[in-house]
Image (cartoon, rainbow, N blue to C red):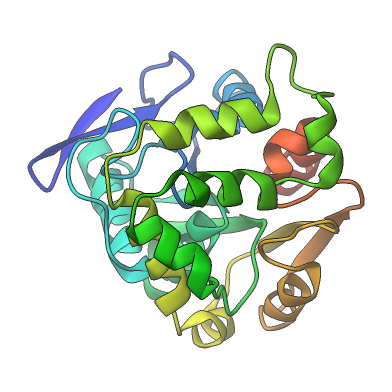
Length: 263
């Protein structure tokens, strides 16, 4: 479904359901360089089980127009304006990696509008290596390769995928290959620059769930635990075989955790 945010077309997958303002809403926010389809199983489930779903394409990727947003704070602001455009007052937010930082920012800065947050594949600080940033800035294929390989646990390269019909490395590369020049760099730089993680964590008062992959090579489980410890009353689920892209590497486990958390 399309809305207009900041004068630009903004797309969110709604599980083929119209928005019903009498239902609770859950927003899914993807990570750097990615798009809404990575939450395919989880977003479809909730869309068919009594919730409004907005699995967003952030500006500049997927079906959303506009330039990529240059900071985590800007992404959080855009999410609030998308809710305004959809007529939604409050929502739960499920974010992955960069999207998790945006969800954290939303919960801290816009507490009245955020019912609860689930943060996947996250940690703080979310620093990015100089070589990775340089490759992304130059729009080199190696940047897409690095993101794909480091986003998965080693066994992902063997071809087994719990999502029928999906190839983990191939699907990630296909999404990244569609990006306009500069989008991946802008996203990675936003993660690298973000400095308010612990400040925002201390302000979060809504229920919070962390879902971490113990084989995460992008945001280590140690940094995820550290951020979770800074959010009062948060819960943590650790998935032993999963890497950074927990929602595609362990889709059923992630869905089960979200069902238990969102109710």
